[in-house]
Length: 437
Image (cartoon, rainbow, N blue to C red; front, side, top):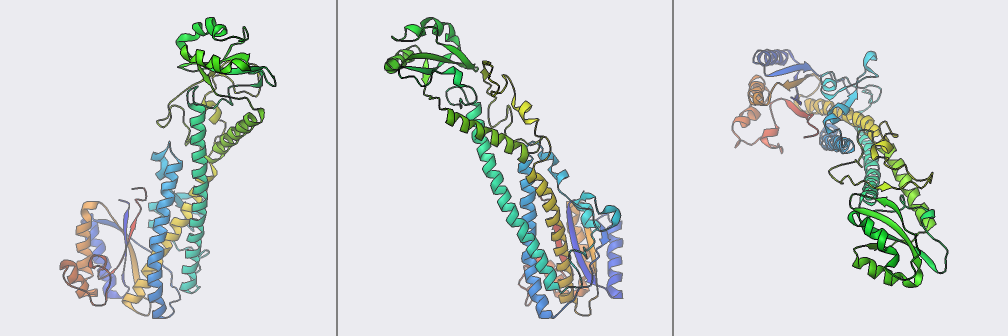
């Protein structure tokens, strides 16, 4: 299970013996795996300040958990083709031991081998300062997450629009990557070149009839410049004065004139935009996670063959999306940022859990500071009820009223504002590593 119970009990002889009894029972009954959870001694300050910190840490705990869940979901969204591998990506730094410093380990191992990071969060500082450091760190990560995911969303939307413009049929798709200057008669006072979409079954008919569809059509001026599964895109040159007549006659024969004016500046601008977006895509998306996928469920695999005209600026005929995308291998910067900062946020979250145990243990068990924290990992979901019964039985003496209220939900604990199911005779905090559920 990816669920942990972080508890503490007083560190006197009687309660250490109770912890030993708990270990024996849970081990023999195969209820949980238990390990000591080391928490350093902090500067306590006043009890009033601890009460305020308890409330602040509760809010910070909720915020941190929400943040790492959002970051985990962002990893899934970025790794669109590799959702099953997202869990493998969500790792934490190995810890403080020299041999583990440069390692990335799974989240469960990090929690079960937790060590307080004295360099990042010095225990000699006042607790308020440690909490403030954690809060500022998480707030900065959230700010960066919002800005980066917003930029990612804009890029993704632009790429989807690019895909729609680039993979539609000849009626709707952009023509900037198909036509060239050589396809048109330009800067003529009398002549103009039109683009006509002809059904595939009517190619022969077009060749026989286009010159007679209207007066003043330039003979032998047609040329097939692109085709898809449905039809072909032909050029035809004629006199400007017969444009409307030609359109009417063409429509009667199921030849559709596509409204298009060759503007070299506009074509160049659109090509540069497409090049920029494709470059951004290669930079932002990991190789295995390209949003614009050939044959994807989102967009149908619509291929357009372009007649070669010897134009070096034009993409080679038949070049697939995969051929072009394979040039941008490696992880994108957003995924790299998510991996690094998810680790940082997760580590901060577990440190917050440790602080909560410390503060609540001092408030519950009093001064001088003397308690033992233990991490329990229930073996299976069905065992949690029995495990809770064992804990309540072993530590019942710590708070008879709380222990009784667990069995009788109608009993109210004076001065306690939490719901009864959240309060136990011992200090208890829940850690759930099911971040993608």
